[in-house]
Amino acid sequence: MEKFVITGGNPLTGEVSVSGAKNAVVAILPATILAEDVCRIENIPNISDVSAMIKILDIMGAHIKYINKNTIEIDTRHINSFVVEYELSKQLRASYYLIGALLGRFNRAQVAMPGGCYLGVRPIDQHIKGFEALGATVTMEENAMVNASAQRLLGSSIYLDVVSVGATINCMLAAVKARGLTIIENAAKEPHIVDLANFLNTMGADIRGAGTDVIKIRGVERLHGCEYSIIPDQIEAGTYMVAAAATHGNVLVKNVIPKHLESITAKLVECGVNVEEYDDAVRVSLSERPGRCNIKTMPHPGFPTDMQPQFAVLLSLAKGTSIISESVWDNRFRYAEQLARMGAIIHVDGKTAVVEGVDCLRGAPIKADDLRAGAAMLIAGMAASGVSEIEEIHHIERGYENVVEKFRSLGALIERKDFPDNKIQMGAG
Image 1: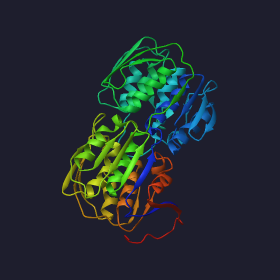
Image 2 (image 1 turned 30 degrees about the horizontal axis):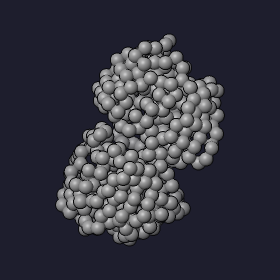
Image 3 (image 1 turned 180 degrees about the vertical axis):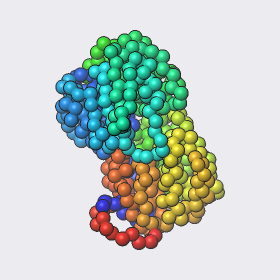
Image 4 (image 1 turned 90 degrees about the vertical axis):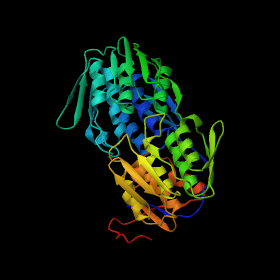
């Protein structure tokens, strides 16, 4: 069993570069299926979700060539299967984007329901609604396979009942080669949706309005290969920003788009954190206890749900009581039990958490319940006094490239260690 072992109490200082956006690349990789050509993609993060998606494409017949560790060429001309089995799909939630991409290319898709972090029920009813509006017939098999097929996809109006990033992306993938005009209303507006639209347009698609709540897609007969670079990861950037504040550090976070970070920056400033913006970097520093603030997660441009657990660590150390309202996922507060082991005071009631700030956290044996909860545990371990051991680190590596090396470069005392599976857990240290 591999764990991260952290000796806390060191302020983070120095510079760190942010990798390509996980949530963009896991949509753009399936989109290469639509090209039936060679795509060169740069700034790809070296994370397990990417490895899983590339493995799926490889098994389906794509030719993958690594130019370097962050640049690959994908030749999808020889993909001849529209089936993705459960053992492959279960490795990541974003496997459901293969439904839209395969439907767009073959007018057929057979993909197992996705895996990834468990954050409560993740229905794909809005995805199915979009596929059916485009003329597809969609059935769910008992073995958790989603079957979608159409004689020919036809442009249509799609109104999403809830703002869904996944459904917006899947509808875009299915619609780019559909005949006629597709209008997606109540669309999600996240930066990675804009990045996907830019990628598809670079391949010859005709997509307008990405980043607004109405996206218009005029179908084209064919797409072609292209070269493209993934945008920086706003959530990774936000994670390092919060880590700098929680450890009373001073960190320059480089390779970012500051506009994508506005909701995170605003809450940090509200807590008394110093944030300086540059063209493609932000500097975050704090020399005293942060102040309290209230957070409500919302679709972009609101405060991102993927930053909520990390921010909870900062608020656990703040002066006063803060309230966190989670409006996106049902099961996002599981990390509260782990923080409580470290001395945090968090009262959870459904989708609301009340956080009473404490003077300090103490190192303890903890685990990563999911990807972003894992990031929160890293921050808590670095901000705490004493030693923390984090289990289930595979969750963290789904979305953070070289996380140990990056935090070490900022002065964190963190290392990956291998422990026997039968190691007896001791009490909090």
